[in-house]
Length: 161
Image (tube, rainbow, N blue to C red; front, side):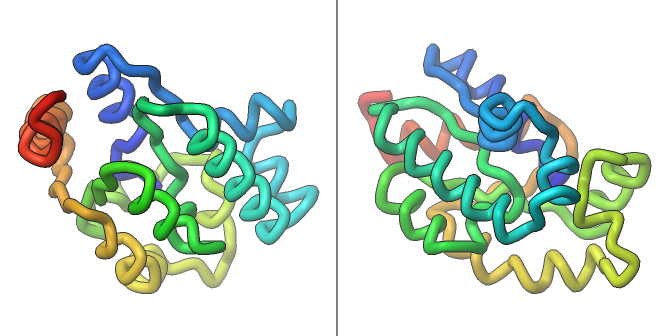
């Protein structure tokens, strides 16, 4: 959440001439509701089921493309294993302070509304899942640098790209 997945993913797709899918946007489009509304009306467990279904749909219908998975996608239902099996996974790593600055005014992040929510604890809990991505890129907010680093990794991993 707030690491730049959608912005960097869209730019990466543009440069590679691939399709781009934002998993959260895909869910919102299918449900006709925002992620925040889905959380509020149907709960996180239901949202995580939708997320897994949409991830599986992406995997089944795209032979190539860039997917920006939601911040929690990797942490539930074996999704990280699926993503690692089906593609090149990249963890866009940011410090908690960087994320806090990016998210401080966000009203569209349901987990931020919870009174007991701690970004530091949240990041720490998810880190084990994120670290199982094939690659890690530190994203301090410079989109071009992050995209260039990812392009370098992809070309090393798949020289035909």
